[in-house]
Image (cartoon, rainbow, N blue to C red):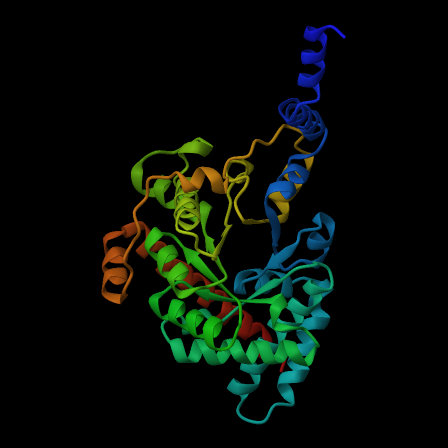
Length: 351
């Protein structure tokens, strides 16, 4: 056999060419898939809704709720039976009207979670009352109560993420829940690396940086009205946290949240998880463009980042120095608290 021909044949069968062929085939195939399908190959997609029909339509792995989402869902006729079920539960609880309503509220959150878990194969996030955001002990007690309620429905705690605001007290509550009770936590309202670093040191399972709210703040406070995805301050924040976590081998996962457009989502392809509203899931489902990988652990390992020291005084100082993070954390807690009060009024009206 001609030596040149033999060399060429060996080259065609080499691992390099094999990888190239696979990459080419993947590229050709990806162009035929929706952006949502491509995203699911590199990122765990989570539905950001309390609407079961939307969750069922897009087949996410996990789902997350908050007081605002449950309030919106509770106002829909198709979920009225869950609200009435929770009210009946509350009526049979001993004690004052206030206690009965509080028990009905917790029960309603768990009912929504149980229904969601019938649809998704993974986990559901259930939020602790935002009004407890500065009380570590009560946050722990409330979280354990929610876990016990789920247990009465036969739901293992491994399928639940307890959602807490990423205040110093909330992070300490998560640390206790994770290390002493083996309860997985999702720290929400993340707007700074200081919060993310403190959560990682506490060993929490998951954090939720709010991409869109960071963008909103910068538009309102900097005079810049439009940001391209790569320049979006919310995207930049999540990329920074991603690089920090992977660089220093933290087990805590990152779930980008609160998106304003699909450009932000695409710019974070490869993030551990992304929680996406039904409207944006639909846009991604209708989008046939190719979706390049944006985040990967190997590249993050090479990032030039320094480790933060996040003991309490330092944490509070870093938050004080970050006007955006301080404003948005406080606003987020107030908003969730307001919607919790609205939901309480709805429940009370049915007693």
